[in-house]
Image (tube, helix red, strand yellow):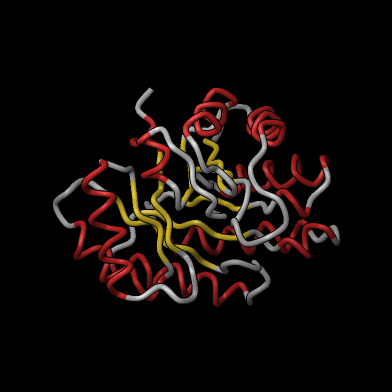
Amino acid sequence: MNLAATIDHTLLRADATEADIQRLCDEAIEHSFCSVCVNSSWVAAAAKAVAGSGVLVASVAGFPLGAMDSRAKAYETSRAIAEGADEIDVVIAVGRLKGGDNVFVEADLRGVVAAAGTAPVKVILETGLLDQQQKILACRIAVETGAAFVKTSTGFGQGGATIADIQVMRQAVGGRCRIKASGGIRDAATARLMIEAGASRLGTSNGIAIVRGGATGSGY
């Protein structure tokens, strides 16, 4: 199993500097990770740093709360794409989902998918805040909007990726989109279990430890 090819090498901390972003990109190139995942203000720098390497640039929208105005999410998405992002990870409107406003949730995501154009969109469910039925509903709404992935967590909220959630999500999407596991994936053994459960992409800041077979204590 080539774990490196599944990893979105992630740096979304508020205190990340330009030097940190450059280091992230250098590491992604060195280890042949699938992508780097950065906040939208760093997309241009990341795109320049990985140009010609085959490493993709992923950016986030509505991160990490998902409670922003829908127009803000769509604008952040369009700007990230214009700056060189290849993929967008957007946080679902968690409170609207929990409150039963499915129409809002779907329209919110459709705006991001439209703004992304041909770039794949990964919908972050923040599974630690949802019950079983809400997870299933969120997956079904994401599929209807044309999202390419459903994703477990931001890594900044309550809980993280679990095997049980990956299995629920896999059943809910029924092969109509892919699954990204993120949040608390710190070692190779956990990474392999996530892939075996049905994830095809892993979001983690611990990619180097994972590909080297070690472990770290970092959160995301």
